[in-house]
Image 1 (cartoon, one colour):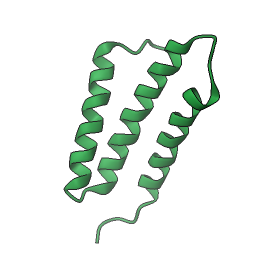
Image 2: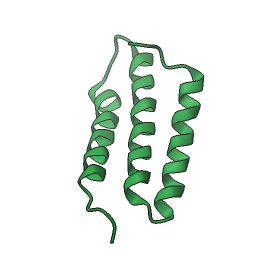
Image 3: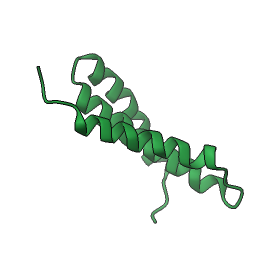
Length: 80
């Protein structure tokens, strides 16, 4: 697995901010996908930082939330 760099974290944070802004402009599906991607990258970077003392809530719960948000975004009906 490739290492997550500071540049990747900045892109993830930008995706989160863009996802919230795009979702507020009524493009909910795109916003949710961006938020899910940004959250997953940040959670994976934290997963690598914890090392051997991994805890389930701190590691897997954010990834599960990101995966669920991605699934809900894909399942949303198209447009009104």
